[in-house]
Length: 213
Image 1 (cartoon, one colour):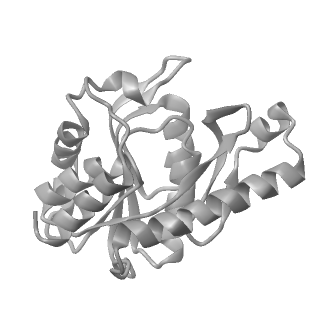
Image 2 (cartoon, rainbow, N blue to C red):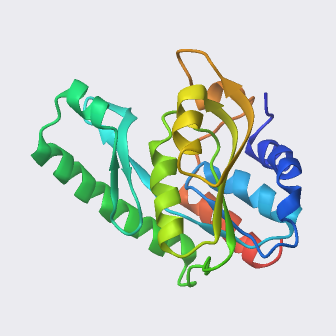
């Protein structure tokens, strides 16, 4: 159990000590992954940025997702779930386009005009506050590899076993404190405090990290 996202990030940083001083870039997945990533970056004395991937919400159950979209517009689908939910191809395309627009908006809003940090030929630590299905993380990994990272290491405080297994097939390394074998998985259940974050709070984390805090 973690007190909050900052506590989770500090605990994760202990696992990631080998990356300290290795020119690594820490990338948080907005919104909830950013405070975790900020704590990791602070502990490792590494720069912080975002990888603004976002899940594709199921229309009748928007808390659940059937895939994700990367900042480059690449779509990663959970094909089995798409079939089970009977989403038509036109629906998938329309939802993907809407989410891609939101991803681009977040990148603009969160960075406040700052350029994205280069990950070319550098190790990238991709951080989220937990993995439920793993598809958002797959989109993040694809985005970071497309930008030329020398290695992608995924770091999360908690994850479902199925999501970890999925992500481990794509990432160079995966760091996770709590792996859950339970059939029902909720990231929030591993935190004492798990508030929704606002865009302003995400920007605040990035601003403080850029200022050296």
